[in-house]
Length: 336
Ligand code: PMV
Image 1 (tube, protein in one colour):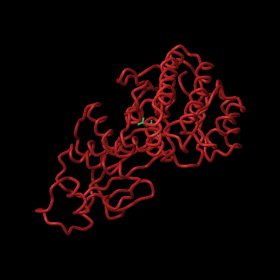
Image 2 (spheres, protein in one colour; image 1 turned 90 degrees about the horizontal axis):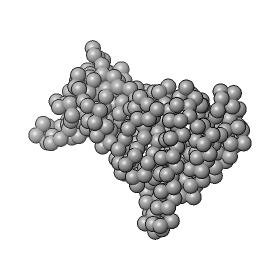
Image 3 (cartoon, rainbow, N blue to C red; image 1 turned 90 degrees about the vertical axis):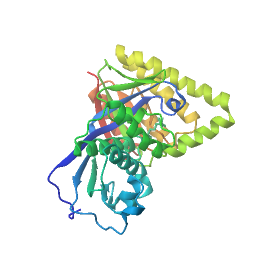
């Protein structure tokens, strides 16, 4: 975007996350645990652009932030293989678009031309929280550009507005975890941090298929409408697993965590949000030496996570996952 130049820029940083326990059930208020992956970063920068790219709108027709930005083409976005005026951004960037509008509104934006750019260490649409991370980073960068302070609660609320565009009705777990310094628990309707007092390794494996969070959340909602007793019983089990796993994390019991991960995967598969490839990756990880494994995030594609007790085991699990078809793998040290 060579037409843009700046003297000052605003920056915002968030990170990927994995849901260790409680995806889907958290949408219905059950407990969950998620871990921020501080080494997989999402960064956003905001700079003043030289001038609006084009302007054919009269001020009289401008009634909102959205229309100012769209009619004057005053925001350019460079994110996830897209580069151009914000209003031309594809549907997959709707949540980033919402994040930009909400942050501009918060910052009392006056219509000046801006360039917003994101860069990311991890793939989008893989259950790693890229939509929440991108929204959170863009919001922080815009507020930083205008030197506007916002509380954690305000940043969370702005990110959630964007997340609701991405997921329908998001639980808030991604918005919290992608901006958190430590593991996050959801319990009794509240988020808080937990300490992981065990040294272990998580192996992440990308199935190479896009996660389908919006679709799986919607499909599960329909399934629950049809079979409320059966589905609620499974969701409740996922919530109970999350609660008991919190204790294991705080007391350092990796074997129990591994067993609970595999059990959670079985339940998620019963709920219909896994795929044959995700199931095969989970099996391969366990055969390759993992203490347990499961899908993470919305499912229908995306990633699996496997727990290993040592770095050597993690390397073996990583190899097993690659042999079983993972297109990319990462090893992340937790606790310790
Ligand atoms: O696929 P992700 O990373 O966006 O995670 C979705 C997690 C769900 O529990 C399925 C939805 C939610 O809003 O928590």
